[in-house]
Image 1 (cartoon, rainbow, N blue to C red):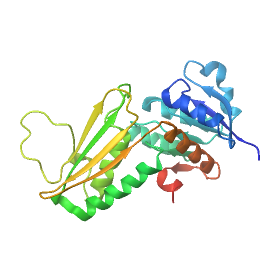
Image 2: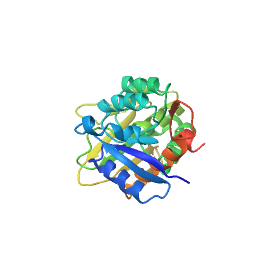
Image 3: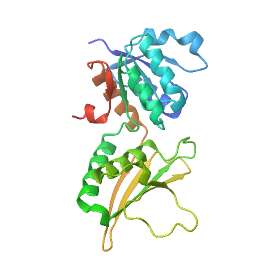
Image 4: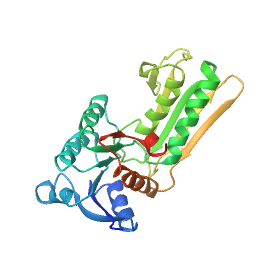
Length: 245
């Protein structure tokens, strides 16, 4: 069977390099080429030569890359985090014309953690405070992480809450903690790939759900699994729930 040819956008970033290495070591795939802002004029043809595009860039760029993929009618796998509601809406519009897979985290384990958080939040109820702590390397540009926000949403949705109940860290005279508050704390430093801890704090016990990424290859392999699956899909916006259904 002919390998699936991949164009990697953002080849000089941590994840871009990891994706390229994963493509080159996986017999299912072949590298059609790479593309970046700096090489756009000379390397745009790499999209046309590919079967599918993978991008891990920045939130402000993802929409433009998606539109470029749509011009060439190429499916897109995006692992870019930190998308605003408006940017996500723009991505959804482009997905009416090409298949797009987007996930803040390409890990199956993180997806399972989200399901566990939702179940724990629902079963334990408001008597258990939800506190989320995420840790990443010093060069991560967005905070809190997209994964932390997904975990917060899982906990909030299970209790019928919305984002107005989120707080990001604490400072000063904050007063007593409201029962319906969901707190998110971001730590940055070193070369931590990604750790997420969700605490359910009750009066007599504490439940903690933790996920640790041990190697960035985890996310690269997840992106390739998504790419292999996405080629068979119709235009729409997909995520981990669709991949693992």
